[in-house]
Amino acid sequence: MELTILVCFAVYTALLFLVMWLTGRRGAKGNEAFFRAGRRSPWFVVAYGMIGASLSGVTFMSVPGGVYGGAWTYMPLVFGYVLGYAAIALVLLPLYYKLNLTSIYTYLEQRFGIASEKTGALFFILSRLLGSALRMYLVVFVLYEFVFRAWGLPFWVPAVVFIAIILLYTFRGGIKTVVWTDTLQTTFLLLAAGATVVAIMNNLDMGIGDLLKASSEKGYTRMWETDPTAPKYYWKQILSGMFITITMTGLDQDMMQKNLTCKSLRDAQKNVMTSSMLFIVVNILFLCLGSALLLYAEQTGFALPVNEAGAVVPDKIFPSIAFSLSGFTAICFVLGMVAAGYSSADGTLTALTTTFCYNFLKFGERSSESGVGCRTKKLRTPKFELRTRRWVHVAFALLYLLVIIAFRPFHRQSLIDTVFDVAGFTYGPLLGLYAFGLFTRRRARDRWVPFIAVASPVICYILKLNSFQWFGYHFGFEILLLNGLITFLLLWISSLKRS
Image (cartoon, rainbow, N blue to C red; front, top):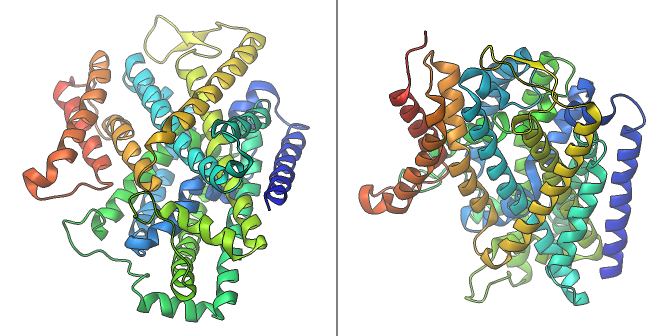
C-alpha cells in the first residue's frame, strides 16, 4: 500500500509540473506573471480553483471529523460566508480595481501612511504564515502517520519534500501557475470526498436518502445551536462567518491576488459570487462525509482513533476509516490530502512573497517627497527585482517549513479551531483598519497605528481567557469581530479630523 501511495503522489506531482510548464509557455513572463498573471485569468477558472484554496487540508479533515461532537453546526458559519463574499464583491473589489493594486495593503499607505501599510502587511504575513502552515502541517501529519512512519523516516522528511515541491512549481510562474493548479487540486479534493461517501454507502447498502435519514435519527445533522452562551450559537456562527470571509478572503493578499488576476472588475465579482454558492454545496458534501464516517463506525464496530488520554481525535477519523475501508478509498484520500496541502500552501507562498516585495521592499518605485502615496521614481532594475523576488520566495519557503516542524509537539485539539483562533487575533486589526479607512473621513495618526494593532489582540486575548468567569459567556469565532471593533474605536479616539 505504501508503494502505491508513493506512486500516486509522484503522478499527481508530475501533473502539477505539467501545468506549470503549460502556463509558462505563453502570456506574461517574469514578475508580471508571478504577481499578476498579466490580469488575463478567466473568472470561472478562478472561481472553481478558489474552492480548493478555501477548503485546504483543515476543511478536508476537520469538517468531516467535526461532525463527531459538533454535528452540522458548522453550516451556519458557511451561510455567513455567503454574506461576506457579497461584501467583498460590492465594497472591496471595486476599491482594489479602482486603485489598480498588486498588493492590497498599498491602500493603507495611500489612506493613512507608511506605518499603517507595514502594520497591515506584517499582520497578514504573521497570520497567513501561521494559518497556512498549520493547514499544511495537517497534511504532512496524516501522511506521516499512515505512510512515512512505517518506513522509519522522521517527521521533517515529508515536510521538506512537500515544501520543496511547492517551491519548485511556484518559483517561476507564481500566481499565474497557482490559478491553474488550483483547478486540479479542487477536482481531486471533491473526488476524494465523493468517492469515500459512495464507498461507505455501498458498504452499508444505503442510498443517499437512507444515509441522511439515519444521520438525522442519530442527531448527526443537527445544524442550529440555540444556546446563546454556547461557542457555536448559530447567530454567532453566521456573524462570525461573514467577518471571517471579509477578513480571511477580502483582506487577505493570498485570496485577493487570485481575484485581481481577472480581466475586469465585473469578472472578479462574478468569480466571487459563484465561489460563494459553490462553497455551500461543497461544505454540505464534507458534512455528509462526516455523517457517513460515524454511521460506518457505529454499524461496523470500527474503533474511532483516540489519543493517549483515551479521547477521540476528530482529525484522524477520516484517514483511519479511509485507509481501512479499501485500497481505492485509501488512494483517493491520499490524493485529496496531497491536493489540499498543495492548494493551501502554493498561493500563500506566492502571496507572502508579493506582500514583502511590494510593501516592504517597494518593488519598482519609491515615495516622492510630495506626499503619501505619490510614487514616481524608479528605484531598481527589473533584473534586480527578479533576483530579489526569487530569494524572498525561498526565504518564506524555509520559514514555512520551520513553522510546520515546530508545531508538531503542540498538536492537541482539532486544527480548524486552532486556525480560526489564530485568524481571530491576527486579522482583527486588519478588519478595524480597513473599516476605519472605508467608512470614516478621519485621519489616523499613522505612527500610533502599530501600537493600536498590537494592543487590540492583547485586550481580546485577556477577555477570551476570562469572559466566562466575568460575564458567563464563551467567545467563539466572533472574537474576530470584537478585535476589529476595538481596533476601530482606538483608531477613532486617537484620530484627527480630516482636512
